Image (tube, rainbow, N blue to C red; front, side):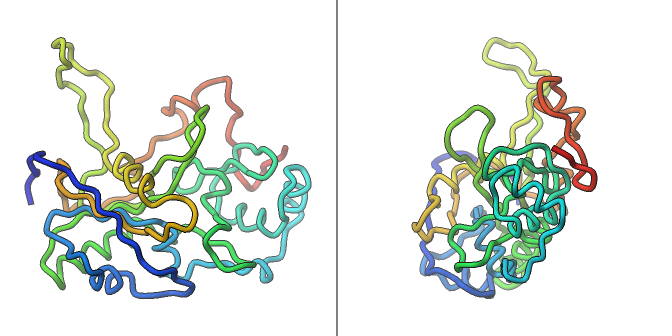
Amino acid sequence: MGNRKLNSVELVPIKIPRKNKPFDLFNTIKNISLRVLDGDILIISSKFVSMSEGALVHLRDVTPSHRAKNLASQFRMDEKFVEVVLKESDTIVSGIPGFLLSIHDGILAPNAGIDKSNVPPGTVIIYPRNPYGSAEKLRKQFLGELNLNVGIVISDSRLMPLRIGTIGVAIGVAGLEPVEDDRGRKDLFGKRLRFTYRSVADSLATMGVALMGESNESIPIVIARGFKVTFSRRLLSSRDTTVSYSNDLYFSSKLLIKATNTKNTEF
């Protein structure tokens, strides 16, 4: 499927009753009253995908390690919750009371993206184990069963440094190129761009998060129509959306705390 001309754009929020246990994600979306169209982009809450895959953790079953107990005491957090954060993190960067700033699969996130909200009491929900794989599976189901070419963006809410409030980030993508390279293009004054990439997937995730809300809205899916993206069947991974520490504007700054691996993190 080729690129789509930008005529008009539409964002359609989809309200779905609360889910408390694993379910079939594709059939749930297929059976919504609004028909999904060829060329649609489905922005789906990571929590909704996680719930469909049974990614709930019962805190009663968690045994906190010595490190988890120390960090919980230092940052005034539940030690069992901290243990889950440590297990889900690739790297712990730092922390403030109530939060550990971590990196999970190349994404900087408070508490490794683990959430206590909108889940049953006594549980927390973690990211899908393979969000890019989950997105690709869903894309293939729409193509194979309904003959529809769609884009999939699995979104989560995220904090921006020095900004108040949440925006969106794509933790899984399929069916569209997540980043557009604008280097070499000319600006309005004819100057060639040297460094600019556009994060299409993160922009779509932010649009979705803006409509999904953060409390009891029960809107886990937003359908985006009419957006000019490059549709693709290329198999994607986090390597297509992340950069290394050494090339990152924030982490390469000497003003920031140097990231350390979770296995030897000490505060």
